[in-house]
Length: 413
Image (tube, rainbow, N blue to C red; front, side):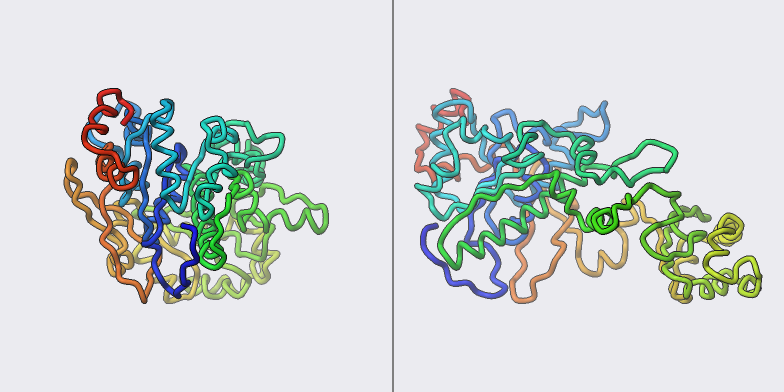
C-alpha cells in the first residue's frame, strides 16, 4: 500500500494482508490477533510444516492430525508452503512481501538480511510495508544474537527475581507467558503503525524485544519502583505476605476446600469484619489477639487455621456465594473443563465451534473483545498444510498450474 486510506472509526482491518513468517509463538500469536481484528493472514511455513503442528504436552503422543496448540494460534489463517532456502522460494517470497501490508518475522537479527530482505531494501519497493520483528533481545545490543528459551528471557528480564519462596530458588511463570505477552504487545504496536500508515502513507519497522516486554510488564514496573526511588530491593516473601500494600495475610492466596481450590485477595483492614462474619466467628472481632492489622499479621497462622477449617466443609460454589454476599474478594479456581462450561463465557459466546475438514468439530477460543459497530466474521479453523498455496500464489504471484506443478515436484512449495 502506497496511498493514504481514509481512517474510519471502528473499521475492522479486513483490507490488510499479513504475511506471517513466524517460527516462534510470539509472532504466531501476534498474527492470530491481527486476524481477529479482520486482517487476512497468510502463514508461510516449510514444506514439511510448522513445528507446532506436532507439538504435544504428551511426549509419547503420536496421534494423527495437527496439535491443539497449532489450532489455537493459527485459526483463520491461510497456509502457503515455501522452501525459503531455495532461490526460487525466496523470489516468490519477495513478490509476496511486495503485495503485503504487514510482515511478521521472528528470526534472529540479521537472518532476513542474509536472505536478501533487509527492511531498507524491501521498503523501497513497498514503502507502506510494516515489518514487525519479534526477537528474544531485540535487533541491537550485546545480547541481540543470543538464542531464546522461556526460562532464560524470563530470568534476564528481572521477572523471576520475585517469584518463589524466600528460602528456595526463584521460579518462572508457567507455560510460555513471555511469548504470548510479547505477541500481544507486538499486535498492539502493529496496529499503532497501521494508524501512521493510514494517516501518512508510510510503513515502519517495529523492533520488539521479548526481554523488554517482560521487563516492562506492569507487574514488574510496580515491583521495580521501590528500587528506582529508594534503592530498596523487592525481595521474595512468604506467599501470604506482601510488601505491596496492606492485606489480611491469613486469607491471601490459594486455599483447598471440599471440592477443589479457592483464591482470595482481601485488601485492607476493612475486610476483617466481613471475613469474621462470613465464617461465623464474630467473636474474633473482640479478641485482643486480632484487634488490629499488625496483630493479625503476627498471629496469621492461628487465623489461617480457623479460616481453613471453615473452608474444609464447603464446596467452591458455596464459598463463592458466601464471599459475594460478604463482599470479600475471592473466586473458585476453575479447571479447563469448567472454564469451557462457565456461564459467563457461554453467555458471551467466547468459545467458537469450527468444523475442521480432517479433525471434525473443534472448539476454539474466540475474540477477547467486542466491536459494536463491526459485523462479526465467523472464525475459520486452522489451515491444512499448504491448503492455500495454489490460491495465494496464483492470485498474488501470478503463477499458473504448470509452474506450481514444477515447483511442487522439486519440493519448493
